[in-house]
Length: 193
Image (cartoon, rainbow, N blue to C red):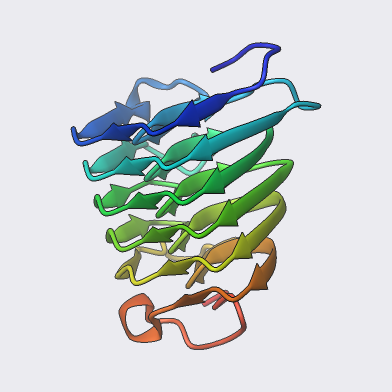
């Protein structure tokens, strides 16, 4: 979605594989199980509730200059978004950013009573719920049991592997499986290995 209205997505799901390919040189690509990129009105509140994805989601790129993100529900989000009672079980693979529910988030992202147990892998930013948060994320009673794979390229500085989210986050009653995540530090499991 890319317009001036708010987004509401209820009682929806995807079971098929989703993939995008950034190798053609496009400046950005986003892959999501339900939404590739949400850019609805920044002043409006977007909502997803009782949604899920079980299909694999993948995004490839040729270099870190291509802003590619993959998420179980949403690939990229540039609006205020609330996700309620939703989940992902599909494997998520992103070149730059990958998250079990959201690949990349801007503005305010609120996640309530949701979870991910699909494996997540990326080269730069990888997390159980939100691959890279550039705004503010609030997580309430949500969790990730995902296996996280972090394929950090040599001589790379700006990277992150986190149990729940990379970037600013406010966590309440939420948790991750530290053995599967391979992350043990911090409330959100933030690591800058």
